Length: 489
Image (cartoon, rainbow, N blue to C red):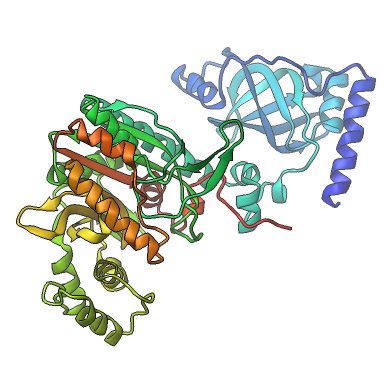
């Protein structure tokens, strides 16, 4: 039958139930055990078959015989078998179960626990009730949903059909809980900052633009939390973090979704070395919580997350990958010539810093399989980071890379308001020259800095990419419940 045939047939069953005075969608339901709790209760009682239970769940398999039937109910904890006999529940209820209940429906089953001859803990049913009728059939008769487009657009079917997908999102939730626990135990305060912002900032990205009608004001979905969190450091909250959604109006790929989850944290009286220590300890502890060890397997490669992680400067890692010493190519034209000689396509009128970043991304980044901190970035692509002492062309910034993928970004935060204003002015000139990711001027943030911000270390990393690593997924869409997709129209 087609899906429409199934739908029509099930709607007819709903009408039949209502004609018999039965509600296929009752308002309330009770239960004493989840599926997993029922099995555990029987096991712990060493097979005591007098344990009464009431379980609920979706009917995921059904084997109807003449006078008795077996079926499985699934809830969020797992599944349990039920055994229904006509002599136990009565002919009327048994016929109702046979003729009007379908795979996909939700049932409540009451009875006592026992073990079948095949060794499976089951419920010997004495009472059965339909608690929600499914009008559409289960995907692919419960054999699994494999069409990628359908899996992402109708994630509820994906979760229903694919147990491994449910496992990914359970692991993601445990991961976020472990992150919070790690930070809370170290005195960090979880906070919330605006998603709708009058000035976007804190990252190099194009924003989504919206309009507030009552205020007649253009607003932006945030691209980062940074500037608001640093205002809190100014206000005296010495350790803060936020886990939330950011929005960047950029391309979609296996590593990018326009709406994504990130964490940013800031610690007063710290620098980027302190942030390195925090990252490697956080990652290893979260991995231990989620997968039970600090070594994870990602696409067949064993990756060790336990400290210490490798630390290398951007200059050195580019030299390792290309043989080029960007320190000796300290002006634009020689570096541009060297980049073009290696066949790297670059946009017209590039800056020296963006050329360095492009060179790094193309040749060095894919080689960084084991966790690596790449330190010390060009100042002109890092407008919010503090200069390296004695070397004003470079800043105290690092990004960290795992499995050839950029996973996070951190600074010794720039807390000199005069220097910050000068950096924003530079960014304004870049914007006028056509850089649509240049950072805008934020006068209120500078005013905050002028009230004094202590030396501060800041860090941001992607929750989604961390989940990809810990669940061995190559696409960000596999770890986001509802990823952004092109319209079907």
